[in-house]
Length: 73
Image (cartoon, rainbow, N blue to C red):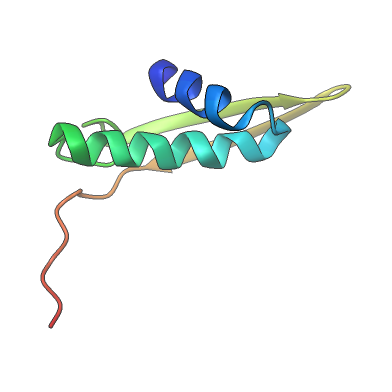
């Protein structure tokens, strides 16, 4: 995740809370490129925390999906 964070921040800059969506997308792309079994860099579950101004804390429990996509005609 740290490598994806660096790539996102260098390409787009600090976008506040929206930045997390871009980091998750970068993790998904990296997992597919690396051939990981899931979108979470091979892990099934994760927890995402981010902090806003003042005393704002947002928390999300994440569940990965398989990176292999079924063929849809």
